[in-house]
Amino acid sequence: MKSMTIGARAAQRRPPLHVAFFNRAFYPDTSATGQLLTELCEGLARDHGCKITVVSGVPLLAASGTADAAKSGKAGLTFTREDYRGIRILRARGTRFSKKRFVGRFSNYVTYFLSACYAGLRMERPDLVVALTDPPIIGLAGLLAARRHKVPFVMAYKDVFPEVARLLEDFQSPTVERILQAVNCFLARRADRVAALGGTMARRLIEGKGAPAERTVVIPDWVDCSAIRPAPKDNPFSRENGLDRRFVVMHSGNIGLSQGLERVVDAAALLQSHPEITVVFVGEGVKKTALQDRARKLGLNNVQFLPFAPKSRLIESFASADVFVVSLKEGLAGFIVPSKLYGILAAGRPYVAAVEPDSEVSEITRRHGCGLLAPSGKPEEIAARILHLYRNPADRQRMGARARAASVEFDRPRQVKAYRVLFEEVHREASRVIPTPWSKRIFDITFSGLGLLLSLPLALPAALAVKLEDGGPVFHAQRRVGRGGKLFKSRKFRSMVVHRDDSAGPRQAADGDERITRVGRLLRATALDELPQLWNILRGDMSFVGPRALLPKEVEVNGAGESISIKKVKGYSERHRVV
Image (cartoon, rainbow, N blue to C red; front, side, top):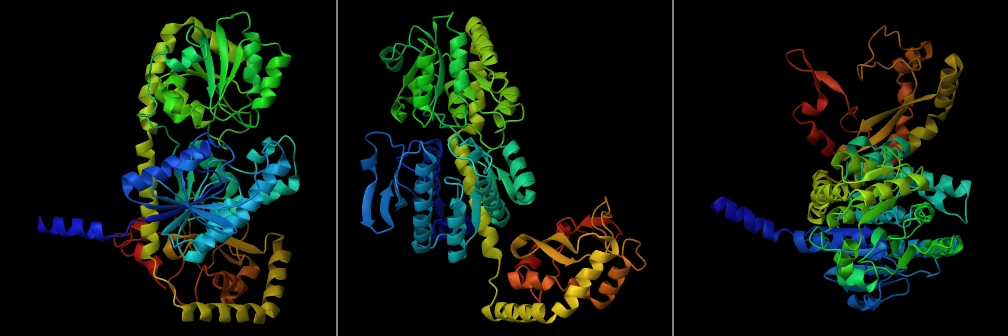
């Protein structure tokens, strides 16, 4: 009992985990990422005792009557300091042009990015830095701050670029796409952890951006099941808006570029023969005006647009719907995960999901049987699914009950706790790594740099000989495990034939190994094949003095002659702490 008391006191004395977030949207911004980040920070601060700093931008989609809730503090030229419910906000200044045109979005993002970089360098030292994806390059500011303060870096993907950037209807640029691809690959590989919203997104990041699978985790977005719950349709919100006596098909949330909501309006046109069915859009966004124009041109009387519903009225707003619609443009599965689905589940309402088969929404729908799937972008199929639910109230009731049961999996406290566990794990791993003495690092930089210069007369002929022997690549790159368990690419001059890796796993070369080329035998005998590793030492991936960097799946033979994973060998983890 005494030891427990001492442990409890030690925990109380332990300083709170300080997490710094980078994302343009934050309270009072009503965009999906802004609201979700606000809820995450509130939960971490209130329920888990974390100290939170957010480097955000000025709100572009603010709900009325909310801006004054954040207390302003000291103002600077590039950012201002505010406090909101115990959360420190560094409000990076930037332009506030309309998001409806690319020039406005570009100016807003770039000016926020530059201010955010400066704010990150000036902030109080956090324990770790987390960057989201609004704008898609903000991770660079987060990584800069993490390196400046020598703390771990977590990349939390809400959207995946450049694929999402292709949604821009007024600007397309192969150059911008290449830049965004390079930035996101760089961030995914450099992050201590990569957080994805679902399995398909995780796969996109691993296969398309080079995120290490062992450092990629899945934490879905969420809904507060206590704030949104099933309620009667006959409520003040539905009566105020004339929805109480109609069959309501609702889209609730941001009306943006990714959903392909034009097809939902087209589906409404196909449902005009059923005047009791009304399609209702609740929310704001860059596509709202275009959708209103489309509905007017089609002469639709069964489409209604309502403003953003504040949190205090979400229960009533969601309860006004008989059926929801969730849509996502074709080709975006895994690059975007519609967070509005979780609110629909909590409200206990069925839905029609016009999404691709491999999307996270499809997976949840199939697993829980709480909605109907329709092919993405086909209004006739959307209309057919709506009509099925309209004509089958028993199906609606069953699916609604399953939806509410499924929402528990995505309840806000559960996902906030998952982030807390992730952050503690990353922080704990980083604290176990012993800092490299400056004298040792200076030694590595000096002699690796000299070695690269002095070895050029040998390295160039060696590279030419490797290329001329069989026309294959000059270098052989392998992923190795470095300090703190981080992976890096170790490069050597290739000494083996191409495409002869053992399918059973890593295998050490032996004398007379048929895989070794003639040039390779000479390189190995003289150790010239290892000259490119001087570059790894210069970068800090390796050191002249330290344990050998192992392959992630390397095995060794134990005393009984059995092959076992190197990770199971006693002292494996400690080797990654060596300076």
